[in-house]
Image (cartoon, rainbow, N blue to C red; front, side, top):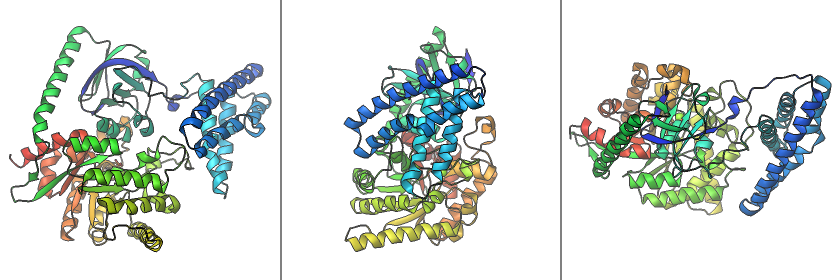
Length: 543
Ligand code: PEP
Ligand code: MG
């Protein structure tokens, strides 16, 4: 059986299906006549949740710091709290609600109540309530406790309704050869992470969870977007030879990894990497990256219970700068919101998260988070060639405020006698149409631009980058998007600043000749796309 989705990460995989349930699949009835049964179900789900949390708490004492262990302990207390589970039992009895509806309602109202508190500590408990409420709900619905990415068998092909970027970041590429999701678009962060991992991936494969069972043999074609369940021998052989061709192409391309690109007019073009952490950086350097054009720092904040401290972040940025040995490291400040959330950061539910409190907007509203990160970057700046980049800037006021916070951090560090690079370069992403249109004005106030075509496309065309049903409309080569790109590069050059592109379009075969013609100075691409990009650039300049 063949199903079609959107191929988002090149490569072919042959493996065994493993289904994981996602929270988006949760559907349940609201009322029930059988109150006694609903009470029993809730009691059992609460008990199961307690056991799970106790298990995590035991592990936490060995592996996590005291603060994280304390948070997990507090989940146990919530499970016994009359105002939480007690209230849900009451709703079952008095309003004839199902256990699922009762626990969801109580979780939601407590979450909203805690979110309103002035005091930060109490406010932070809102995320704990949500976490524990979702755990009980998963137990009621018999869903997986947590996705355990560690104990998966070799050659696993993951099938999920959706994967969060934080889930994808935990995938072990030694075990997982591909993943397939029912939701998601070409430039969703989940898709981008699959590329960075170098595994095949197909998203937007509607209904696939009803077609596969655990243990079934499957083939994933990340190029065409086809998923073949229970393939026959001839198809397996065909894909084995495609895999062999891909391997030999990669070997051939390895010869180009260290090639530097110079255009006919003698203009040097940099080919850099987009990374999400030190592991990606190592792969990028092995693949000939000439620098990092985009460090998506939000991945440092994911899959943990608390914010990373200044010291923790400093160490990562310093290590990255040192690994790069003087090559540029562009660190983008936190881009949370949109499809990326943090379990421990209170965020209001928004109807349009991509148009909401995201990236720089969130940082300017939570300046303690922003300052912690900026201080860490500044402290690391003496260890290499670091530059700072602000995401999602849409107005000059936002840029001004971001730079003011940066200046304040510099001043504070100076007063504390801490070293930093006083000449650190500061740039901004051009990923909101207003920024592209006003690029000439912005260019006077930054040291570089980096065009984020993933967002620039969705915001220019009003096409959600995550929505598989309109993926046909998502086109970064749309004349409107191309015109904004051209305007941005021209504005940069008029102000004598360089222009990079770190969106997915930078490695696109059809776009590369055009981007070169526009005068793009730097192509920053996923580590796995470095060789392909260099070959395409060489071809475009006629080598
Ligand atoms: C972009 O929007 O093109 C970009 C590089 O940023 P992200 O994909 O992380 O939103
Ligand atoms: Mg973006």
